[in-house]
Amino acid sequence: MTAPVPPSSPARLRRSLLSVPAINDRALQKAHALDCDGVIFDLEDSVAPARKAEARDNLKRFFTETPLRDRERIVRINALDTGDADADLDTVLALNPDAVLVPKVTTPADIVDICARLDKARAPQGLRVWAMVETPRAVLEIGAIAAARQGQGARLDALVVGLNDLRKETSVLPQPGRAYLVPWLMQVVLAARAFGLDVVDSVFNDFRDGDGFAQECAQGRAMGFDGKMLIHPAQIDAANRHFAPGEAEIAEAEAILAGFAAPEAETLNVIEIGGRMVERLHLEQAERLMQKVRRISARKDIA
Ligand code: COA
Ligand code: MG
Image (cartoon, rainbow, N blue to C red; front, side, top):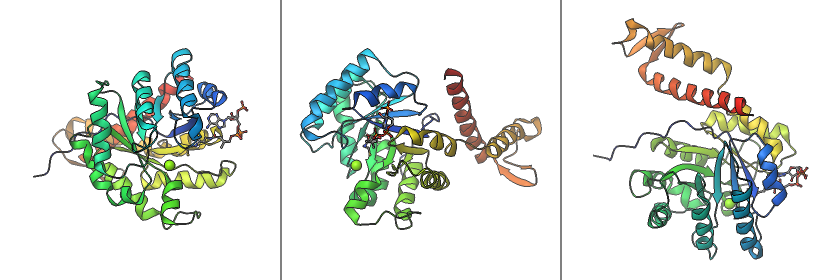
């Protein structure tokens, strides 16, 4: 018998996750006025090796003096096998963000390792772990990596695809449509869904190409991703739009909720709505979708 999969966490908004280099004070301050669902404070690739300590200090100052409110705060550390990881983790423990994003994860042992370090430091359970999937080995082992959530990797909450590294490691060329990458991307989505994780699509480098970005958002949404990692504020609106439930989807979810709420449906597992069969399993999906819709309206009220 396989262990039961823990239920998914409540639906969170993860449509637009903007990477902000922790070295860049101006960009950090800019984040306050941006409408992204989450900010990934980056200590890794956007910070030169000689400036890692300065970036950590920046982040500490930012979290203390001008903390970001009302959206998820994720800190991306350097890879666990680098000399920077320990100091990065100390920073994470001091700041207590919503999640730590671990780059270059290769095996489930990496997830267990980071969770053990957080547990040992008595980090609150609310501090979650997100994993970058950006090495060939991670794609090969993605099922086992995602499954770590069932055991000693229980803090694992989301997978984030990193195509810049994956392309570099595999020699797959960047092409519109990502045809040669789609099989790997779908494996990541599948693994995330099998173990109740959220899954975030990769960055799109050409931030001046709005049409290309919109196409990739639409593709990512169709593939089942929850959202996209972003590099520039100009990408936020399109990501928010593409990864939000559409009007037709909302109307359908409302009809399903109403259909199953009717007294005559109380003992039914299958009902008919508008000439189509709807099963009780669609009810859970509809509830999750409406949870997201409510969170989007709440965000609009705040803005
Ligand atoms: N977060 C917050 N603000 C950002 C930003 C980001 N990621 N990227 C750009 N901005 C701000 C700029 O500071 C600038 O603000 P200002 O007008 O008040 O000066 C404004 O948006 C317009 O920026 P623009 O001039 O178009 O871009 P740029 O040349 O300043 O920066 C990049 C371009 C690519 C260097 C920058 O977007 C960036 O560093 N992105 C994140 C890179 C990253 O995190 N990489 C690692 C993950 S893959
Ligand atoms: Mg990377």
